[in-house]
Length: 296
Image 1: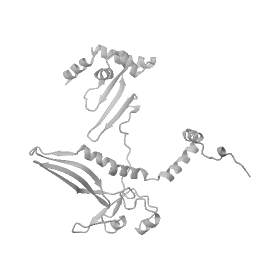
Image 2: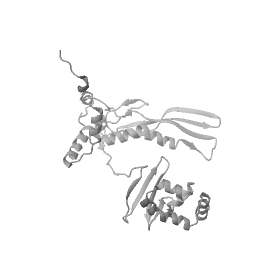
Image 3: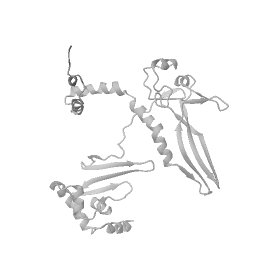
């Protein structure tokens, strides 16, 4: 009888595995090995599919909530409100309001667009009457192949072949009037994240693009002649950064220093900005409001 120690049988040690994953990749040769490994797992169109799935499941509902109510000035007693929105499965209308599912292969052969209805639930009131309508179709949305709304989603090779589709086709594109079309990838600045970079004058600046369903603004903090300023796309003039602190109710210089940092080099860089606020005679939140009224 052979007795083995069970403590040595587990090939996966959680501590060692975490250390290996967290360890930096040092050599260039090892870094290049990550590229085929990433493509093997994710593929070339994974970002397309993830983006489209997020749009039809989450983003389209946020857009609906941002424009949920519709009011008419000429008739205040009437209003309409969206209750829900959903992208249905791809289908085609064959007459007499009869819908049937459609496949990408059929769209290619018949020069059709591979799309799905957009269904909404609405509530509207006219006078004292309250009406709720469900399943109202307001339009159609092109469907990305192999996305969560596509008929090819999570199909195996046999099912793909039955629909006359190549199992090696990764999807990630649309079919419009029988023609396959793909959306080109474009680089975009990250939303709601602070980015530190150099501007055209070789100065470090911190910028953030704040995006909601209603608005999009850009805010930046930069240094000029030893002083720090805040720039905003809705303001014509840049504002000394210390005035922003005082506008938020942080009135004493010590409180500002506690938020910025106590290191000597930080205080030396920030001292000119504090002196600028003193020179302008702004020490309290009320004085900032008075200055704002004068500027406006």
